[in-house]
Amino acid sequence: MAPPPVLPDPRQVADLAAEAAMVGKALESVTADLRQRATAAARDTSGGDNAAPAGGGDAAEILDALAMIADDPMLREDAEAAVRGGLDAPHALDTAFTHHRETLAALGGYLAERAADLDDLKHRAIAACLGLPMPGIPAPGHPYVLVAEDLSPADTAGLGTDVVALVTEKGGPTSHTAILARGRGLPAVVACAGITALADGTVISVDGKTGQVGVGLTDEAVAELRRNDQEERDRLAKSSGPGRTADGHPVKLLLNIGSAADLRPGAEGVGLFRTEFLFLDRKQAPSFEEQVAAYAEVFARAELVVVRTLDAGTDKPLPFLGLPLEPNPALGIRGLRVDRVLPDVLDTQLDAIAEAARATGADAWVMAPMVTTPAEAAGFARRARARGLTRVGAMVEVPAAALLADRLLEEVDFLSIGTNDLSQYTFAADRQHPGLADLLDPWQPALLKLIAACADAGRAAGKPVGVCGEAAGDPQLAPVLVGLGVTSLSMAAVCVPSVRDELSQHTLEDCRKLAARAR
Amino acid sequence: MAQRTVTVASASGLHARPAKLFVQEAVRLGVPVRIRVGEKSVPANSMLGVLSLGATKGTEVTLESDAPGADAALDALVTLLAQDLDAEGALDG
Image (cartoon, each protein chain N blue to C red):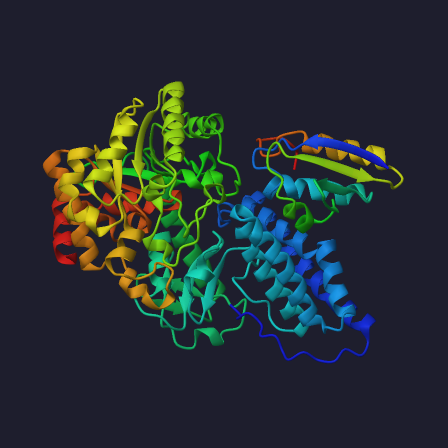
């Protein structure tokens, strides 16, 4: 993975026409590169190749959309106008991309998120202009091993399903790369000296269990590795049915989704329906009717759905809420706290969830994000039950809530632990901070102790306590969480088979021993 | 000048997939068309321009062109905007 290019010092432009042609050529080469990758990605999906990643169609669509932006006539016109204004080609591209980026960012929501795409395209166009390698996560259009110096959360946010393994020159067992790989079930080797010296396109093998990276492989060795990998995948693909330990102790395996489009067969329901994802691009609040339709679409297709009410705040803005900026957004008005300033939003949402549940006859559970005190849990439960919703819960993301889990469970019917935020707040470490990844490791004993406190309270009250968030999709951690007393695990669909497989290899007693050791 | 006014029907507005399909069609037709919301007018073949309109479901947009073939091109684009492009199978592509 090449770093973003550094803009050189501006230079005097002598030949305006030649400079404008450079701008055009850079944009054309970025467009052609993206188009070619989009075609390759589309071919991989339709070609029936077993190694093709799921979601290749999405990758092709995304690459295609990026190509259209690189090929945009307004963008090109602006960059050429900047050349006529006296800028050299790299600076003209920088100016034009920055201008459009700001326009999109000002619109907020979904479009503001696309602003990051423009940064990526800008880096590509400037690199093309300077004759440098294309920066950013590559997208060769086929499955590949991602090799990098190190990976930051920003690098990996958009990591596609075409990445089959990660190898980094730096990092340690608790670096972001290692945590990310565990969460996605990807083999990873970190602190692999000399790996970035390998030429692009070299065939290598990566064994995440032994930490070995193989180079100089013969065709026979590659064929054998592929065969073994396929056998392992086939074995996992055959795994089905509800989550169970080796001795039959049930653990519900559920999905984290943002909309009905994320639903996949193979899980026992939805453990985290992130409703804010439906409305990221809105400048006006979604109507009651629109919400009913969106929820009903999910309810009609899953047996059990745990709906989380809107989890927004100034750290995750929903433009229609119009919340003022805060100096410390993670510690401010977010999640259920939005209700302090805009109570109508939650009322409408609860009405819509109740209506969608009635219309579909679904087993709809509802929970609030960022619950901090038993009084907040009680207030939320009262309002949900007043609408006929019978399964009401609280998310545990704040240490204060975990410490009083028993009292929370006097007010609500279940708890769901959001490990990412619970880590952030327990360790006073920003979840996005690249230098604090070791503190955010879900194996941290202090985090496991808080999870255990919630699970103990659940057992005493006879009420379910689940985990959602990245930790729940980590196959190595799953038996530990079950050993602590967690009753359900909610994760990305891609993680379900390996978590199911891992659980089936441990008895409950075994899980308890692993949990005792981890604490 | 040929002109049509239409209400955006796609659930997600003129963003993401609907915007892409619209711009692709405008490029394919090859007739210079401008799309306008209120005072803001942009070329229909510009993805960045179309996104910057911030049109959501229910926004009224006006298509304008005085090029040869304008009427047929505007009709094609209006048809596109008037359907829910987010719906499954709305288009072959």
